[in-house]
Length: 152
Image 1 (cartoon, one colour):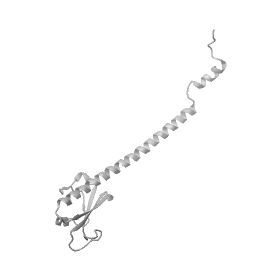
Image 2 (image 1 turned 90 degrees about the vertical axis):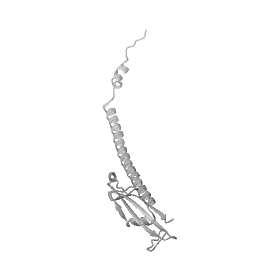
Image 3 (image 1 turned 180 degrees about the vertical axis):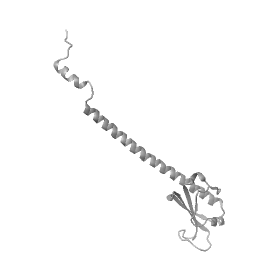
Image 4 (image 1 turned 45 degrees about the vertical axis):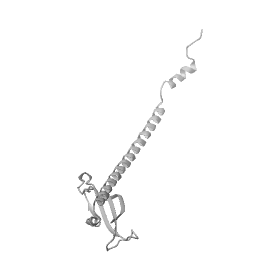
């Protein structure tokens, strides 16, 4: 028959294979701590990026409201927008205030431009206007758009 008792060598090393040493546990704790710290940092970065995306999306919505409003107005009705007139709270396409966006401001500038050079502002009559809309959040510009509108 075989002898199933452990040898002297097996008995001596058995105490080392029964569990983890203190150094192994400390290394594991450090690695888990680094992973948690990295996840917290990434979560913060993702939250900031998401908030910036939401602000930009809101700004684009508010620009579209002004674009629709200028489309609904007659060409001569565009003169009702004073140069750089701010709307705070912002307005919708029908002119009603959007109170739930009170932190945002729409700045609308309507300028008569030359028919041959849309960069050149003219004082006299013109068949073209340049509409500039800037959307600000707490006095910080989020987005801006420029378009040309013709009389015809």
